[in-house]
Length: 133
Image (cartoon, rainbow, N blue to C red; front, side, top):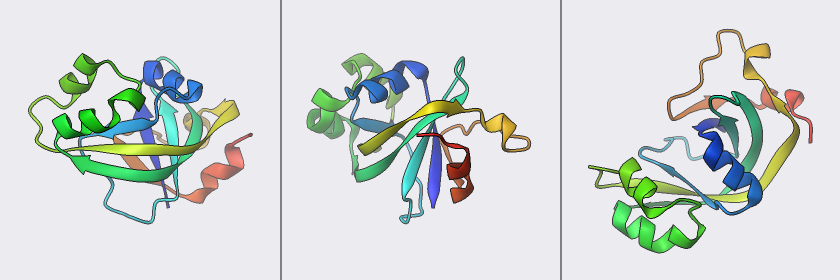
């Protein structure tokens, strides 16, 4: 099982650079058998730019998450706390083994009626046939 995450380009570039080692979410996927996370870089890129495997998923109060991962968050503190404003729980997905695709995949060419997920969506393994490493 795989998931597709929508991430803003300013953060996907930090993942590609290796300076962002965690992806933050207000809610997390329930299916624990997720193998790979595919990254959909949102507007203006609008393409799947790569994938990563999950090392760990931390669940905690945003204050505690920040204290734990701030050095590898790829974020400035104000962006982090604005994202989690009013929340008592957050998730930090630890990025392991990131693979950047040679040619980003335009999902609209392969999935009829594709709509970028608000947070995430489950996708099957057929995505692999469109990816070039």
